Length: 458
View (cartoon, rainbow, N blue to C red):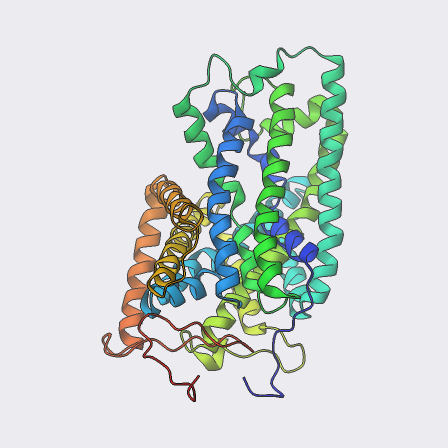
Protein backbone atom coordinates (compact mmCIF):
# COMPACT_ATOMS: atom_id res chain seq x y z
CA UNK A 1 0.00 0.00 0.00
CA UNK A 2 1.49 3.30 -0.99
CA UNK A 3 2.28 6.07 1.41
CA UNK A 4 -0.53 8.51 2.03
CA UNK A 5 -3.33 6.00 1.75
CA UNK A 6 -5.30 5.21 4.91
CA UNK A 7 -4.17 2.08 6.68
CA UNK A 8 -4.96 0.13 9.82
CA UNK A 9 -2.81 1.34 12.70
CA UNK A 10 -1.31 -0.62 15.58
CA UNK A 11 -2.42 0.85 18.91
CA UNK A 12 -4.10 -2.00 20.80
CA UNK A 13 -2.47 -3.55 23.88
CA UNK A 14 -2.63 -7.14 25.11
CA UNK A 15 -5.39 -6.20 27.56
CA UNK A 16 -7.39 -4.60 24.77
CA UNK A 17 -7.21 -7.60 22.45
CA UNK A 18 -8.09 -10.04 25.26
CA UNK A 19 -11.13 -7.93 26.20
CA UNK A 20 -11.99 -7.75 22.50
CA UNK A 21 -11.96 -11.55 22.32
CA UNK A 22 -13.99 -11.90 25.52
CA UNK A 23 -16.51 -9.39 24.18
CA UNK A 24 -16.80 -11.46 21.02
CA UNK A 25 -17.36 -14.61 23.07
CA UNK A 26 -19.70 -12.83 25.52
CA UNK A 27 -18.89 -14.60 28.84
CA UNK A 28 -22.51 -14.35 29.99
CA UNK A 29 -23.38 -17.09 27.52
CA UNK A 30 -22.45 -19.64 30.20
CA UNK A 31 -25.43 -18.43 32.22
CA UNK A 32 -27.92 -18.41 29.35
CA UNK A 33 -26.91 -21.90 28.17
CA UNK A 34 -26.46 -23.48 31.61
CA UNK A 35 -29.78 -25.34 31.52
CA UNK A 36 -28.98 -27.03 28.21
CA UNK A 37 -25.43 -28.01 29.26
CA UNK A 38 -26.57 -29.30 32.66
CA UNK A 39 -29.39 -31.33 31.13
CA UNK A 40 -27.15 -32.84 28.44
CA UNK A 41 -24.34 -33.71 30.89
CA UNK A 42 -26.60 -35.25 33.51
CA UNK A 43 -26.00 -32.47 36.02
CA UNK A 44 -22.22 -32.13 35.55
CA UNK A 45 -21.98 -28.86 33.61
CA UNK A 46 -18.56 -27.78 34.96
CA UNK A 47 -17.02 -31.09 33.86
CA UNK A 48 -18.42 -30.57 30.38
CA UNK A 49 -16.95 -27.06 30.30
CA UNK A 50 -13.58 -28.39 31.49
CA UNK A 51 -13.49 -30.84 28.57
CA UNK A 52 -14.59 -28.12 26.14
CA UNK A 53 -11.91 -25.72 27.43
CA UNK A 54 -9.14 -28.26 26.83
CA UNK A 55 -10.54 -29.07 23.38
CA UNK A 56 -10.73 -25.40 22.31
CA UNK A 57 -7.33 -24.64 23.84
CA UNK A 58 -5.77 -27.09 21.36
CA UNK A 59 -7.00 -24.91 18.50
CA UNK A 60 -6.09 -21.77 20.44
CA UNK A 61 -2.47 -22.97 20.60
CA UNK A 62 -2.50 -23.43 16.82
CA UNK A 63 -3.86 -19.91 16.31
CA UNK A 64 -1.09 -18.59 18.57
CA UNK A 65 1.58 -20.40 16.53
CA UNK A 66 0.20 -19.16 13.21
CA UNK A 67 -0.08 -15.58 14.50
CA UNK A 68 3.69 -15.61 14.99
CA UNK A 69 4.45 -17.21 11.62
CA UNK A 70 1.93 -15.26 9.50
CA UNK A 71 1.34 -11.83 11.07
CA UNK A 72 -1.48 -9.83 9.54
CA UNK A 73 -5.21 -9.22 9.77
CA UNK A 74 -6.59 -12.17 7.83
CA UNK A 75 -7.00 -14.89 10.47
CA UNK A 76 -7.50 -18.45 9.11
CA UNK A 77 -7.67 -17.03 5.58
CA UNK A 78 -4.06 -15.86 5.84
CA UNK A 79 -2.85 -18.99 7.62
CA UNK A 80 -4.39 -21.54 5.26
CA UNK A 81 -3.33 -19.48 2.25
CA UNK A 82 0.30 -19.40 3.31
CA UNK A 83 0.56 -23.02 4.48
CA UNK A 84 -1.95 -25.00 2.41
CA UNK A 85 -2.03 -23.05 -0.84
CA UNK A 86 -3.79 -20.06 -2.33
CA UNK A 87 -6.88 -21.95 -3.44
CA UNK A 88 -7.45 -23.62 -0.06
CA UNK A 89 -6.75 -20.28 1.57
CA UNK A 90 -9.42 -18.69 -0.58
CA UNK A 91 -11.96 -21.38 0.36
CA UNK A 92 -10.99 -21.04 4.04
CA UNK A 93 -11.64 -17.31 3.86
CA UNK A 94 -14.88 -17.93 1.97
CA UNK A 95 -16.06 -20.43 4.61
CA UNK A 96 -15.14 -18.06 7.43
CA UNK A 97 -17.10 -15.28 5.71
CA UNK A 98 -20.23 -17.34 6.33
CA UNK A 99 -19.38 -17.32 10.03
CA UNK A 100 -18.08 -13.76 10.30
CA UNK A 101 -20.68 -12.10 8.08
CA UNK A 102 -23.71 -13.56 9.82
CA UNK A 103 -22.52 -13.77 13.43
CA UNK A 104 -23.02 -10.00 14.02
CA UNK A 105 -26.58 -10.54 12.82
CA UNK A 106 -27.06 -13.17 15.52
CA UNK A 107 -25.62 -10.84 18.16
CA UNK A 108 -27.92 -8.00 17.15
CA UNK A 109 -30.95 -10.32 17.14
CA UNK A 110 -30.14 -11.49 20.67
CA UNK A 111 -29.88 -7.93 21.98
CA UNK A 112 -33.10 -6.88 20.22
CA UNK A 113 -34.85 -9.91 21.71
CA UNK A 114 -33.61 -9.05 25.22
CA UNK A 115 -34.77 -5.45 24.84
CA UNK A 116 -38.18 -6.49 23.55
CA UNK A 117 -38.60 -8.85 26.51
CA UNK A 118 -37.75 -6.00 28.88
CA UNK A 119 -39.87 -3.39 27.07
CA UNK A 120 -42.56 -5.31 25.16
CA UNK A 121 -44.35 -2.13 24.10
CA UNK A 122 -41.46 -1.37 21.69
CA UNK A 123 -41.30 -3.72 18.66
CA UNK A 124 -38.19 -5.86 18.18
CA UNK A 125 -37.36 -4.26 14.83
CA UNK A 126 -36.97 -0.86 16.51
CA UNK A 127 -34.44 -2.27 18.99
CA UNK A 128 -32.67 -4.07 16.14
CA UNK A 129 -32.25 -0.87 14.12
CA UNK A 130 -31.04 1.03 17.19
CA UNK A 131 -28.39 -1.50 18.24
CA UNK A 132 -27.17 -1.91 14.64
CA UNK A 133 -26.83 1.86 14.27
CA UNK A 134 -25.03 2.16 17.63
CA UNK A 135 -22.39 -0.51 16.98
CA UNK A 136 -21.84 0.60 13.37
CA UNK A 137 -21.30 4.18 14.48
CA UNK A 138 -18.78 3.16 17.15
CA UNK A 139 -16.84 0.92 14.75
CA UNK A 140 -16.84 3.52 11.96
CA UNK A 141 -14.81 5.89 14.14
CA UNK A 142 -12.03 3.34 14.59
CA UNK A 143 -10.68 0.81 17.05
CA UNK A 144 -9.60 3.44 19.58
CA UNK A 145 -13.21 4.47 20.22
CA UNK A 146 -14.41 0.86 19.94
CA UNK A 147 -11.73 -0.15 22.45
CA UNK A 148 -12.83 2.48 24.98
CA UNK A 149 -16.52 1.65 24.63
CA UNK A 150 -15.76 -2.07 24.76
CA UNK A 151 -13.79 -1.73 28.02
CA UNK A 152 -16.63 0.16 29.71
CA UNK A 153 -19.35 -2.26 28.57
CA UNK A 154 -17.28 -5.35 29.37
CA UNK A 155 -16.59 -3.98 32.86
CA UNK A 156 -20.33 -3.63 33.40
CA UNK A 157 -21.04 -7.11 32.02
CA UNK A 158 -18.31 -8.84 34.03
CA UNK A 159 -19.37 -6.93 37.14
CA UNK A 160 -22.92 -8.19 36.64
CA UNK A 161 -21.65 -11.77 36.36
CA UNK A 162 -19.56 -11.30 39.52
CA UNK A 163 -22.60 -10.00 41.42
CA UNK A 164 -24.63 -12.97 40.25
CA UNK A 165 -21.90 -15.34 41.44
CA UNK A 166 -21.84 -13.64 44.86
CA UNK A 167 -25.62 -13.93 45.24
CA UNK A 168 -25.41 -17.61 44.33
CA UNK A 169 -22.71 -18.17 46.98
CA UNK A 170 -24.83 -16.33 49.58
CA UNK A 171 -27.78 -18.53 48.62
CA UNK A 172 -25.63 -21.64 49.05
CA UNK A 173 -24.62 -20.43 52.50
CA UNK A 174 -28.27 -20.61 53.58
CA UNK A 175 -29.36 -23.75 51.72
CA UNK A 176 -28.06 -27.31 51.73
CA UNK A 177 -28.15 -28.42 48.08
CA UNK A 178 -26.20 -31.66 48.45
CA UNK A 179 -22.55 -32.77 48.12
CA UNK A 180 -20.14 -30.56 46.20
CA UNK A 181 -18.79 -33.51 44.23
CA UNK A 182 -22.24 -34.02 42.68
CA UNK A 183 -21.70 -30.94 40.54
CA UNK A 184 -18.69 -32.60 38.93
CA UNK A 185 -19.88 -36.21 38.65
CA UNK A 186 -23.01 -37.97 39.88
CA UNK A 187 -25.17 -41.02 39.26
CA UNK A 188 -26.70 -39.44 36.14
CA UNK A 189 -23.32 -38.62 34.58
CA UNK A 190 -21.52 -40.69 31.95
CA UNK A 191 -18.58 -40.25 29.58
CA UNK A 192 -20.99 -40.12 26.64
CA UNK A 193 -23.17 -37.49 28.28
CA UNK A 194 -20.16 -35.37 29.26
CA UNK A 195 -18.63 -35.42 25.77
CA UNK A 196 -22.00 -34.65 24.16
CA UNK A 197 -22.42 -31.68 26.52
CA UNK A 198 -18.82 -30.60 25.86
CA UNK A 199 -19.58 -30.45 22.13
CA UNK A 200 -22.45 -28.06 22.89
CA UNK A 201 -20.36 -26.12 25.43
CA UNK A 202 -17.61 -25.63 22.84
CA UNK A 203 -19.94 -23.33 20.92
CA UNK A 204 -19.65 -20.91 23.86
CA UNK A 205 -16.02 -20.25 22.88
CA UNK A 206 -16.80 -19.21 19.31
CA UNK A 207 -15.14 -15.87 18.71
CA UNK A 208 -11.78 -16.22 20.47
CA UNK A 209 -10.21 -16.46 17.01
CA UNK A 210 -11.48 -12.95 16.20
CA UNK A 211 -8.35 -11.64 17.94
CA UNK A 212 -6.33 -12.86 14.96
CA UNK A 213 -8.11 -10.32 12.72
CA UNK A 214 -6.48 -7.47 14.68
CA UNK A 215 -2.90 -8.31 13.64
CA UNK A 216 -2.36 -4.92 12.02
CA UNK A 217 -3.89 -2.88 14.84
CA UNK A 218 -1.90 -4.14 17.84
CA UNK A 219 1.36 -3.13 19.43
CA UNK A 220 4.05 -5.75 18.76
CA UNK A 221 1.41 -7.77 16.95
CA UNK A 222 3.41 -11.00 16.57
CA UNK A 223 3.58 -11.51 20.33
CA UNK A 224 0.41 -9.66 21.34
CA UNK A 225 -1.97 -11.61 19.10
CA UNK A 226 -0.52 -15.04 19.96
CA UNK A 227 -0.56 -14.31 23.68
CA UNK A 228 -3.99 -12.72 23.42
CA UNK A 229 -5.55 -15.80 21.83
CA UNK A 230 -4.31 -18.11 24.59
CA UNK A 231 -5.18 -15.63 27.35
CA UNK A 232 -8.69 -15.21 25.95
CA UNK A 233 -9.39 -18.97 25.84
CA UNK A 234 -8.00 -19.47 29.35
CA UNK A 235 -9.93 -16.49 30.75
CA UNK A 236 -13.18 -17.57 29.10
CA UNK A 237 -12.67 -21.16 30.26
CA UNK A 238 -12.06 -19.99 33.83
CA UNK A 239 -15.24 -17.87 33.79
CA UNK A 240 -17.27 -20.74 32.35
CA UNK A 241 -15.90 -23.26 34.84
CA UNK A 242 -16.45 -21.12 37.93
CA UNK A 243 -19.95 -19.94 37.01
CA UNK A 244 -21.16 -23.34 35.80
CA UNK A 245 -19.85 -24.94 39.01
CA UNK A 246 -21.67 -22.40 41.20
CA UNK A 247 -24.86 -22.71 39.15
CA UNK A 248 -24.70 -26.49 39.30
CA UNK A 249 -24.43 -26.31 43.11
CA UNK A 250 -27.43 -23.96 43.29
CA UNK A 251 -29.45 -26.28 41.05
CA UNK A 252 -28.16 -29.86 41.38
CA UNK A 253 -28.90 -32.32 38.60
CA UNK A 254 -30.00 -31.76 35.03
CA UNK A 255 -33.79 -31.59 35.24
CA UNK A 256 -35.53 -28.24 34.67
CA UNK A 257 -39.06 -27.09 34.02
CA UNK A 258 -37.64 -25.21 31.02
CA UNK A 259 -33.99 -25.74 30.06
CA UNK A 260 -33.83 -22.53 28.00
CA UNK A 261 -35.18 -20.41 30.87
CA UNK A 262 -33.18 -22.13 33.64
CA UNK A 263 -30.85 -19.17 34.17
CA UNK A 264 -33.69 -16.69 34.64
CA UNK A 265 -35.36 -19.04 37.14
CA UNK A 266 -32.09 -19.29 39.12
CA UNK A 267 -31.70 -15.49 39.09
CA UNK A 268 -35.17 -15.15 40.60
CA UNK A 269 -34.34 -17.83 43.17
CA UNK A 270 -31.14 -16.17 44.41
CA UNK A 271 -32.02 -12.48 43.99
CA UNK A 272 -35.73 -12.02 43.41
CA UNK A 273 -37.76 -10.93 40.39
CA UNK A 274 -36.64 -7.29 40.45
CA UNK A 275 -32.99 -8.32 40.47
CA UNK A 276 -33.61 -10.75 37.59
CA UNK A 277 -35.21 -8.00 35.52
CA UNK A 278 -32.34 -5.58 36.24
CA UNK A 279 -29.70 -8.17 35.34
CA UNK A 280 -31.54 -8.95 32.13
CA UNK A 281 -31.21 -5.29 31.16
CA UNK A 282 -27.55 -5.08 32.22
CA UNK A 283 -26.77 -8.13 30.11
CA UNK A 284 -27.66 -6.01 27.08
CA UNK A 285 -24.58 -3.87 27.83
CA UNK A 286 -22.31 -6.89 27.53
CA UNK A 287 -24.20 -7.88 24.41
CA UNK A 288 -23.55 -4.51 22.77
CA UNK A 289 -19.83 -4.92 23.51
CA UNK A 290 -20.01 -8.32 21.85
CA UNK A 291 -21.73 -6.83 18.79
CA UNK A 292 -19.01 -4.18 18.46
CA UNK A 293 -16.35 -6.90 18.41
CA UNK A 294 -18.35 -9.11 16.04
CA UNK A 295 -18.88 -6.38 13.47
CA UNK A 296 -15.30 -5.08 13.68
CA UNK A 297 -13.85 -8.53 12.94
CA UNK A 298 -16.18 -9.10 9.99
CA UNK A 299 -15.37 -5.76 8.37
CA UNK A 300 -11.62 -6.32 8.75
CA UNK A 301 -11.72 -9.79 7.21
CA UNK A 302 -13.63 -8.44 4.20
CA UNK A 303 -11.15 -5.57 3.94
CA UNK A 304 -8.16 -7.94 3.84
CA UNK A 305 -9.81 -10.16 1.21
CA UNK A 306 -10.76 -7.08 -0.81
CA UNK A 307 -7.28 -5.59 -0.52
CA UNK A 308 -5.92 -8.83 -1.99
CA UNK A 309 -8.40 -8.81 -4.85
CA UNK A 310 -10.16 -11.96 -3.63
CA UNK A 311 -13.27 -9.85 -3.17
CA UNK A 312 -13.81 -6.85 -5.49
CA UNK A 313 -11.01 -4.47 -4.51
CA UNK A 314 -12.85 -1.25 -5.36
CA UNK A 315 -15.69 -2.20 -3.04
CA UNK A 316 -14.00 -3.99 -0.15
CA UNK A 317 -10.28 -3.17 -0.34
CA UNK A 318 -10.43 0.45 0.68
CA UNK A 319 -10.51 2.29 3.99
CA UNK A 320 -12.44 5.48 4.54
CA UNK A 321 -10.07 8.41 3.79
CA UNK A 322 -11.44 10.39 6.74
CA UNK A 323 -11.98 7.66 9.32
CA UNK A 324 -9.35 5.08 8.31
CA UNK A 325 -11.80 2.22 8.87
CA UNK A 326 -13.39 -0.37 6.51
CA UNK A 327 -16.71 1.46 6.30
CA UNK A 328 -18.00 -0.59 3.35
CA UNK A 329 -17.74 -3.82 5.32
CA UNK A 330 -19.37 -2.18 8.33
CA UNK A 331 -22.31 -0.96 6.26
CA UNK A 332 -22.78 -4.35 4.57
CA UNK A 333 -22.91 -6.19 7.89
CA UNK A 334 -25.28 -3.52 9.20
CA UNK A 335 -27.54 -4.12 6.19
CA UNK A 336 -27.51 -7.86 6.88
CA UNK A 337 -28.47 -7.13 10.47
CA UNK A 338 -31.47 -5.05 9.45
CA UNK A 339 -32.58 -7.73 6.99
CA UNK A 340 -32.40 -10.21 9.89
CA UNK A 341 -35.52 -8.71 11.47
CA UNK A 342 -37.48 -11.33 9.53
CA UNK A 343 -35.49 -14.28 10.95
CA UNK A 344 -35.64 -16.15 14.22
CA UNK A 345 -32.56 -16.92 16.29
CA UNK A 346 -32.53 -20.64 15.48
CA UNK A 347 -32.38 -19.95 11.75
CA UNK A 348 -29.80 -17.17 12.07
CA UNK A 349 -27.55 -19.22 14.35
CA UNK A 350 -27.51 -22.16 11.92
CA UNK A 351 -25.65 -19.95 9.42
CA UNK A 352 -22.47 -19.54 11.43
CA UNK A 353 -21.19 -22.80 12.92
CA UNK A 354 -20.10 -24.52 9.69
CA UNK A 355 -17.53 -21.86 8.82
CA UNK A 356 -16.24 -21.63 12.38
CA UNK A 357 -15.41 -25.30 12.88
CA UNK A 358 -14.12 -25.77 9.33
CA UNK A 359 -11.83 -22.81 9.96
CA UNK A 360 -10.62 -24.28 13.25
CA UNK A 361 -9.78 -27.53 11.48
CA UNK A 362 -7.77 -25.73 8.78
CA UNK A 363 -5.79 -23.69 11.30
CA UNK A 364 -4.66 -26.88 13.03
CA UNK A 365 -3.77 -28.48 9.70
CA UNK A 366 -1.84 -25.32 8.78
CA UNK A 367 0.43 -25.76 11.82
CA UNK A 368 1.18 -29.34 10.77
CA UNK A 369 1.90 -28.21 7.19
CA UNK A 370 4.23 -25.47 8.44
CA UNK A 371 6.09 -27.92 10.67
CA UNK A 372 6.55 -30.33 7.76
CA UNK A 373 7.88 -27.52 5.55
CA UNK A 374 10.28 -26.51 8.32
CA UNK A 375 11.55 -30.08 8.66
CA UNK A 376 12.20 -30.30 4.91
CA UNK A 377 14.35 -27.19 5.22
CA UNK A 378 16.30 -28.67 8.12
CA UNK A 379 14.58 -26.78 10.94
CA UNK A 380 12.97 -29.15 13.42
CA UNK A 381 10.44 -28.23 16.10
CA UNK A 382 9.00 -30.19 18.98
CA UNK A 383 7.05 -33.12 17.51
CA UNK A 384 4.42 -33.16 20.25
CA UNK A 385 3.78 -29.42 20.18
CA UNK A 386 3.78 -28.90 16.42
CA UNK A 387 2.37 -32.21 15.14
CA UNK A 388 0.51 -34.17 17.83
CA UNK A 389 -1.36 -31.29 19.48
CA UNK A 390 -2.49 -29.69 16.18
CA UNK A 391 -3.66 -33.08 14.88
CA UNK A 392 -5.64 -33.52 18.09
CA UNK A 393 -7.09 -30.04 17.63
CA UNK A 394 -8.05 -30.86 14.03
CA UNK A 395 -9.74 -34.09 15.16
CA UNK A 396 -11.73 -32.27 17.85
CA UNK A 397 -12.78 -29.51 15.43
CA UNK A 398 -13.79 -32.10 12.85
CA UNK A 399 -15.87 -33.87 15.49
CA UNK A 400 -17.62 -30.63 16.43
CA UNK A 401 -18.28 -29.99 12.75
CA UNK A 402 -19.89 -33.40 12.44
CA UNK A 403 -22.16 -32.65 15.41
CA UNK A 404 -23.86 -29.75 13.61
CA UNK A 405 -27.50 -30.12 12.62
CA UNK A 406 -28.66 -30.90 9.11
CA UNK A 407 -29.65 -27.31 8.32
CA UNK A 408 -26.23 -25.94 9.27
CA UNK A 409 -24.44 -28.58 7.19
CA UNK A 410 -26.63 -27.98 4.14
CA UNK A 411 -26.19 -24.19 4.34
CA UNK A 412 -22.44 -24.60 4.84
CA UNK A 413 -21.97 -27.01 1.94
CA UNK A 414 -24.04 -24.86 -0.42
CA UNK A 415 -22.00 -21.81 0.59
CA UNK A 416 -18.76 -23.77 0.01
CA UNK A 417 -20.00 -24.87 -3.44
CA UNK A 418 -20.71 -21.22 -4.33
CA UNK A 419 -17.18 -20.39 -3.21
CA UNK A 420 -15.72 -23.02 -5.55
CA UNK A 421 -17.72 -21.60 -8.45
CA UNK A 422 -16.56 -18.06 -7.63
CA UNK A 423 -12.96 -19.29 -7.39
CA UNK A 424 -13.31 -20.90 -10.81
CA UNK A 425 -14.46 -17.58 -12.26
CA UNK A 426 -11.74 -15.65 -10.41
CA UNK A 427 -8.99 -17.95 -11.71
CA UNK A 428 -10.50 -18.47 -15.19
CA UNK A 429 -11.23 -22.13 -14.71
CA UNK A 430 -8.40 -22.68 -12.16
CA UNK A 431 -5.83 -21.85 -14.86
CA UNK A 432 -4.23 -19.10 -12.79
CA UNK A 433 -3.71 -18.65 -9.04
CA UNK A 434 -5.91 -16.40 -6.91
CA UNK A 435 -4.56 -12.90 -6.15
CA UNK A 436 -1.50 -12.82 -3.89
CA UNK A 437 -1.76 -11.94 -0.22
CA UNK A 438 0.21 -8.86 0.77
CA UNK A 439 -0.12 -7.88 4.42
CA UNK A 440 0.21 -4.16 5.06
CA UNK A 441 3.75 -3.25 5.94
CA UNK A 442 4.95 -6.86 5.97
CA UNK A 443 6.49 -9.29 3.50
CA UNK A 444 3.98 -12.06 2.75
CA UNK A 445 4.80 -15.66 3.54
CA UNK A 446 4.95 -17.41 0.14
CA UNK A 447 2.13 -19.84 -0.52
CA UNK A 448 3.11 -23.35 -1.67
CA UNK A 449 2.25 -22.54 -5.32
CA UNK A 450 4.44 -19.41 -5.36
CA UNK A 451 7.50 -19.68 -7.63
CA UNK A 452 10.91 -19.25 -5.96
CA UNK A 453 11.75 -15.57 -5.54
CA UNK A 454 15.05 -13.96 -6.34
CA UNK A 455 16.65 -11.56 -3.92
CA UNK A 456 15.66 -8.61 -6.09
CA UNK A 457 12.05 -9.72 -6.35
CA UNK A 458 11.80 -10.24 -2.61
